[in-house]
Length: 125
Image (tube, rainbow, N blue to C red; front, top):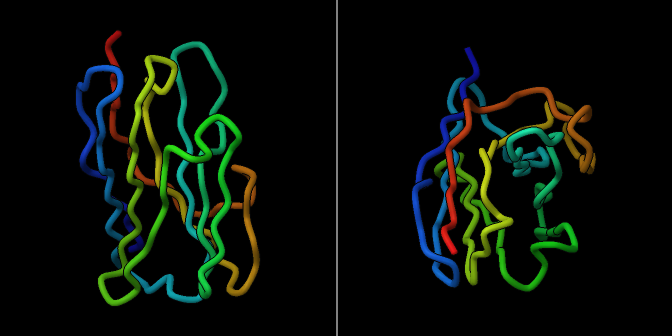
């Protein structure tokens, strides 16, 4: 059974930092794109960042570019999201996701097959 488990969320003041982790189990994702999405209350789930299987190539939404960094450790089957200079508008539930198809780039929620349960990030002003 494949599981993605996020951790590292919490409450932080504006300008602060948090590091999210997503540990995968049940299969390896070393050949797969993994991503982070977030959902604020009353809003749709939106793309935050993604990382390819090699290179690695990274992709970011315009709203987080220059502040967030996605990385992965294939030996640990884990992906990370370092979030710096946090803003109140970054508040939401952050979800880790994995694409089951190898060697393909995935940026939209519908392209991902596995999802974590989410971790809450709250940025106070």
